[in-house]
Structure formats: structure tokens, C-alpha cells
Amino acid sequence: MKKNSIIIEPKKLAGKVNVPPSKSLSHRGIMCAGLSEDISVVDNLIYSDDIVTTIEAMKQFGMQVLSEEKVGERYRLTLQNKSISKLKEQNYKMISEPMTVHCSESGTTIRFLMPFFTLSSAPMTFTGKGRLGERPYETFYKILRSQNISYETTGGFLPVTINGTLRPDRFQMAGNVSSQFISGLMLILPLLGETSKIELTTPLESKGYVDLTLDTSRQFGVSVEMPDAQTFVINGNQYYKGTTYTVEGDYSQAAFWLVAGSLGNDVILEGMQKTSLQGDHAILEIVERLGGKITWQTEGVKSTESPLATAVVDASQCPDLVPVLTVLLSMGNGTSEITNAGRLRIKESDRLKAICTELNKMGGQVEELEEGLKIKGVQGFRGAVVDSWNDHRIAMALAIAATRADGPVEITGFEAVKKSYPMFWVDYEKLGGVIHGESDWRNL
Image 1 (cartoon, rainbow, N blue to C red):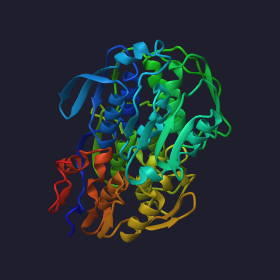
Image 2 (image 1 turned 180 degrees about the vertical axis):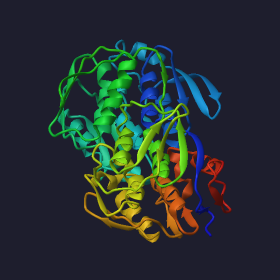
Image 3 (image 1 turned 45 degrees about the vertical axis):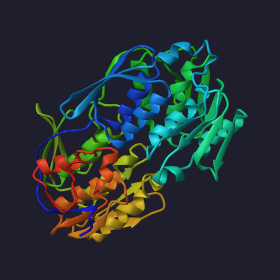
Image 4 (image 1 turned 90 degrees about the horizontal axis):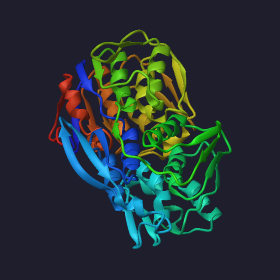
């Protein structure tokens, strides 16, 4: 057994889970509060690696943490950015010295904050680690070139140094690129002096994530108009107002436990909103389409085991669900397919290859396609040694698959869950999961 691995004994899970706050909304709430000269409160946060990265980056842009209150395992932050009040006086420049923004492995942090370079009159460098440096940024580089803004990079990858001023403009980009580029522009353009437009040349994928940006900005007093489905009009001279923002439960994380319920575990999820703009809210509809039963109770929401059918699942609007959906579809009676998932190849891992490889070690019958997966139902898994590929969603999906294995499942790289859900293994154990090994999974 490797030191960075844990062994999970196959066992049914039962009990309640207080689902972590939405990582997507946590990023957005912190960034909006961090762009306001007013005092704001962002409540119901957990300090996953990605959220800590965003907090530290926003401090570099002048955000102050006025207070930090721990409430159980969650945090309530009081935030303010007094520098914003001087924005217009300083010709929209808050930073005068060269600066390096470290984005670790957080794609949301770097793609949202890259447009913030315009707040500096000196060169600003963005860097990261792991696969973040290999992800494509050409969409943003194209915008820089269109505005004759100087930038330096290595073969198109990180680090990248930008020096110039982002002007209000008509920005055109394809809708099938990462929605994070669109959201990043939406955050900074309202602070500039004139109106801008973002025009999509193809239909928008991951629309739910852009909706989250629009809704969060609105709660902080910033508006974006949509004359049609592919045009966003952002008026300048707006400012972010102070508010109290409570982050709702994360459907991306709830999906693991909802799939667990569909596989015969008895898990009730607390802290979820029945209606949500989160794209991964789609897990409810997908489970029901496969024949599962979703029940809302006083205590929370749960999914109940039932014979599972097959389906073709379009992942274009909910890509983060693919790893755990592959586990679910492996329990179906027949062959299912996941389509429009090509972008998963440039996540923390090549998620299509990763989940295909690891589930097949457990007796799955998953075939890797160029833009998706074909999954033949197997009704159960084998015990095996599997790897997370340093990807939080792969690690958690394999843990749920382990509940339907016929023997122990050893997961190497289990600590990857720190990226989004550091308490995952603690919650798994509280539900009756049996975990053992030399590694400390309780203190990630």
C-alpha cells in the first residue's frame, strides 16, 4: 500500500451530509465583495484550496478581510476594498508596481482575474501550477491582440505577463469556449468608463455558469443587459454595492451523494436549494430520467435506489458531473452515452481518459470517445487499486463506485479532494464508510 493512498471497504452509506457551499458561487461572491468599496459579508464558505487561492489573489487587488468568523466548519468573512473608491481619480489604475498573481491550480481564479490586469499601470504576471499551466488561454490572448495590448507568454501557456489597458469595446468570442473568460470580463467591465458588449458567435455552452455570474453581480448592485441570448451589454461607471451574500449548497458536490443514493445508499443532503441556477442542478433531472427517485423532505433531499435505465446525456451544460455520472450509468441496464464532453480533457486531468481507465480497472465497461464516453452497464464493480489522477472529481467518483464493489478499493492520490471538498473523507466516514491506511484523510 502506498503512503498517499487509502483503502475503502465496500459498505453501504447512511446518514446526513451538510453539503459544502457552491465553489462556483464562493468564487463569485468573494470577487464581487472584493471589488466593492462598501463593506460586504460573504457567509457559508469552506477553505478549499481553490477558494483560498481566490481570497489571496483578491487581497493583491486591494481586498481587505476585516473579520473572519468560524461557524462550525464554515467561515463568514467581512470584506472591503477601499482602493476602488480612487479608481476614477487614478484613471482606472489601482496598482502601480509590477505584480505576480499566483493562481495555483484554480482555473476559475485565473480566467476570472486575467482581465483585472487593466487595474494596473505596471506589468502583471499570472502563474499557476499543475495542469493549470497547460490549459488554453488563446481566447483571452485574442482579445489582447485586438486591443493592441502587450503580453508575453511561453508557447501560449503560463506564466503570462500582461501590460496595458483593457478598453470598453465590442468583444466577440465563441460560446463553446470556457464560460470563465466571459464571466471574467463581466466582472471588470462594469467598473470601466463606457459601455461594452460581449457578443457570442456560437451558442453558449455552460450557460448555467454565466447565469451564476449575472445573478451574483446583480446581488451586489451591478447589472448586465441581454437583448438576446448571445449578447451581453455591460454599462460602465457602475460600482459593486455592499451586501450580505450567503453561498448556497453545491450541486456539483451533492451529485456524488445523490448518485450514492441511486446506488443503494441512504444519504440525506442538507443545505440544498430546491431551485437553483447552478448548471449541475441537472443531476436531479438526470437521476429521475434514469428511473431514480428524488425526494425532498424536511431534513433535506435524497435519491432512492431503483432499477436504472440507460440514457444519452449531453454534458455541454454540466461537465463537472461526468465522472460521477459515469459511475451511475455503469449501473444501468444496457448501454448509455455521454456526449459533448470534449472540454473535460483539459481539466485537472483528462477526465474522459481518467474515469474510463480507473472504472475499467474495477470491472467497468467504459469506452472512451473523442467527445464523450460509451458506458455499458455492469451492475457492480470489483475491488481494485485505482488512481485519482490528482483530480478531486475522479477521487470522489471512485469512492462512490467503491460502495458497489465486491472487495476493497485502494485509491492513490486521495488527497486531491482538497481542491474543492477537503471534508469529503470525513463525511464519507461519518456516513459509515470504512476507510483505513497509513495516510491521514481526516486533516486535509
